[in-house]
View 1 (tube, helix red, strand yellow):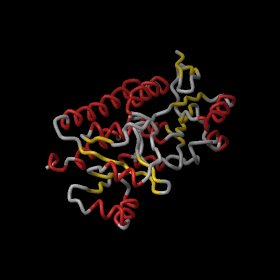
View 2 (cartoon, one colour; view 1 turned 90 degrees about the horizontal axis):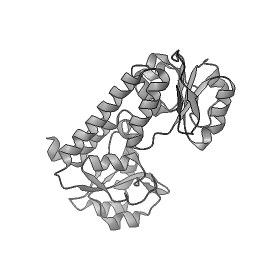
View 3 (cartoon, rainbow, N blue to C red; view 1 turned 60 degrees about the horizontal axis):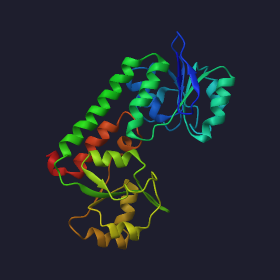
Length: 268
């Protein structure tokens, strides 16, 4: 069988499943472990943190523009890359070295099932891949049903301070917010993390601002935000970054937590 990856490259699926996989994308590493194939992963990036057992896998450095020699030193029979322009040369180098290479791009909720299906075919575990996809998507759908009748909480999700960036409609996080019973006030912007001004954020008057612990501390010391927080209807919400940090197998858990944070009365 021959399949096509997210670069549009063809990947031949042989009769022998790969036993030494280097995953250079934390999202696909988490997928492989969730499928029950973590024992076959012999290399991962320095940014892989989930599941906890991934720390025992050899760190080969960065996932973008990876160290080709460090990856090949693990003697992989399959390399999984993030399909960005930065990784095009690496994909070609691995193929020249005779290593099967598949490149995928997981940016939205809809990419999850498609990517898992492709991984399942390539590693010879379609059943495990389908089970993971079904579980995650069923959890998200359950949260969506449970919040469907609630008044949506208007939110802005700040991800950086200088420049000031927020989550836009091009991010999976905007999708999860909608499923959790929220309304992203920047969902109309296609960019995943558009640059905006604090003045524009305040003019939109969100019910809640989601952000990181560090940025929340900065907000509370800023005069503009302090004035906004004087309104009892306004609040700062800090999700667990380990849950919401990437579009992978924890998106179901992330949606459950976001719904509880946005609608605390429902969670009681």
